[in-house]
Amino acid sequence: MTGRHRHRCTTLAVAMMLAGCSSEPTPEPSAVAAASVLPQPLASPVAPPEPEPSVPASTAAEEPLALAGIRYAPRDDCADKPGWPAFHKSLVTAIKARDAEAFAALATPDIALDYGGGSGTAELKKRLADPEAGLWQELSAILPLGCAVEGGLAAMPWVFWNVPEAVDSYNAMLVLGDETPLREKPGSEAISPVGWFIVGIDPMSFDPKAKATRVTLDNGRKGWIETAKLRSLLDYRLIAEPKDGVWRITAFIAGD
Image 1 (cartoon, one colour):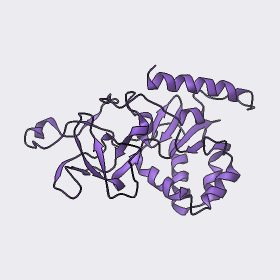
Image 2: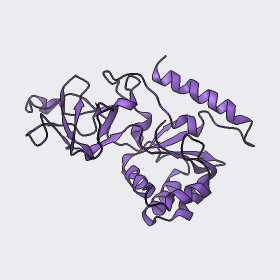
Image 3: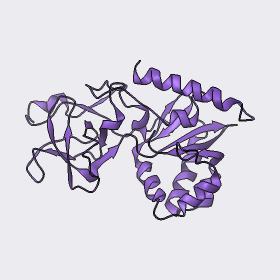
Image 4: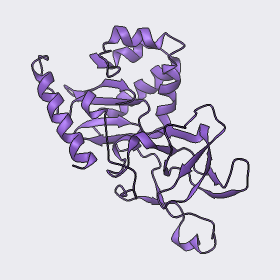
C-alpha cells in the first residue's frame, strides 16, 4: 500500500471513530488524521504538479556542479479559496502580536494539539504562554512556508501535502532557503545550492544542535548541509477547514 493510500485509509477510519463524538458531520479527511502522512521509504521523489527545476535547462551546461533535483519551494494554493484571505490576515496578525486570545478565537473548541489527546482552546492558550514550548516561534516559522489544499482542508506549510509517496518522512528533511549549499564536508567549498530539496538523513544520528548534518540526495549523492537550514517533514503544521463558510484551525500539531 502506498503512503498516499495508507493515509486515506487512516483518515477514513479516524473520521468514522469521531463521527459519534461530534454534533456536526466530520469532514473527510479529519483534521487529526490529515495531520499525519506516513509515506514509504526514501527513493527517487515523484514530482508534485509543475515542479520547479533546481537549475534552468538553459544554464545547466554552464554550471557543471549544479545538481538535478526537484524543488519543493513554498507555494500558496489557499489564497483563492473563499474566506481564506480574511482568515489568513487575522492569523498573521495574531501570530505577529503573540496574541493568544486572538489566535484561539481562530480555532475550533476541540483543536487537536498532539497525538496523546491534548486538545482544546484552553490548553492551546496554556501552551502558547509557556516559553519552554516555543509555539510562537513555531508558528512564525510556518508563515513563510506556503499553504496547500487537499480534501477541502488547508495545511501550512505547503510541503506537508506535497511530499512524494516514496519518501519516508521519518528519514527526510526539507532544505530551507533558495541558495543553501551542499558541501563535501563541513566548512568546505560549496558543491551546489540545494535549496528546497528534500534530502535523506540518518534519524538515529541527527543532532539538531550540530552545525552541519550529513545528507543524501535522491540520486545517492552525499554531502553536508547547515543544520539550521533543515526542517523535518513531520515538524509543526497548522490544519484549517471551512466551517459554515468561516475558516477555523482544527489542528496545530507535530509528529504523527
